[in-house]
Image 1 (tube, one colour):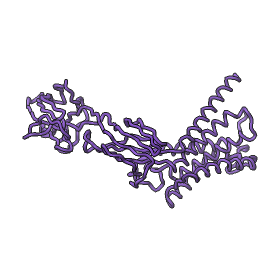
Image 2 (cartoon, one colour):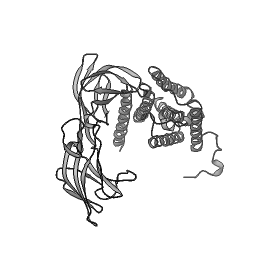
Image 3 (cartoon, rainbow, N blue to C red):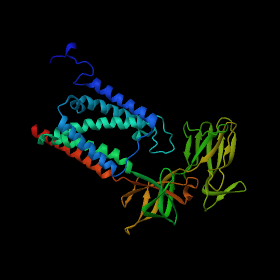
Image 4 (tube, rainbow, N blue to C red):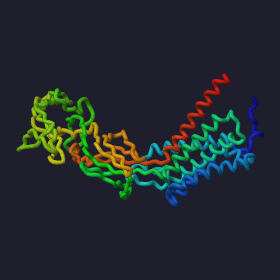
Length: 412
């Protein structure tokens, strides 16, 4: 193989363009997007049918360019490997930034930065770089479609599938609806609200039959009396109270559980069994200092929306208390109604959505002030009409990969 000599290298910006021109062009496009983002703000999402028209125009526009100008230097560069590498690297960098910085699309309380990095999918830099990558991908695909050859089927399915997936995911975001709905026990709700708290009437209704929470046992912990900071380091910094726990050691202190009540209420400074809303975990404990022999004894309580918590002073530096129990699992028993007369009663759990009338319903949260006595259950409703198109693209990529593997084995 002969290495290219200095005299054989083409000057910058003289065709055929290579990696240097591709990276410089891509970075220039990115910077142009930053200027636009800073001056006019985020990209406005387009909705159906405009996004569908744009997708079809984009695809067949690339086909038109390929058919009539495929032999020109600029089109050869637009479908070239150097541009594919440069645009892919730029997209990858922006995706890493998106994964590093909290995104406003998931948390509306996040403030937008001037360059749009905290709202990446709706920023001009991201839109320009994605457009460059999709142009390269589309022209490379058309180059294998016309003229058509059977041996190119794997390449066509792979690249066209990727193009469809990325475009559908991007343009479909304008039609994506993500709403929240507050449900109260025994009541049926037809309206949800968006991130700006605007009411949205839905073609379905949800009735909350019962909301329930399973909790982990509460934990005992020491805290700094001056700062109030819970001590989280060291062995037995957090100890979960269970019926078999009698005593444990933390630093110089032996902690003994004399009496434990999962549901209690204070009566004249002493905690007693209490089986009603707002009952709180409480424990009578005895602490013995292993070095000085000092003994401290008293009640500690996690507290609830109904009663204040109680801590016990250990010495001049520490106090001890019970942390509020953490939710292990929470779910809602709901009945879903559609305008078509469909009715379904089921349990909603976190990460296990129910699909009804084109909507996915997720268990989202509850009123944490009331804990397991919460009468409020918040669910999330998501509708993404472009999701089937994304699945088609992924399916095409799978077909292309299978075809390439099959033809490769056949040739071997």
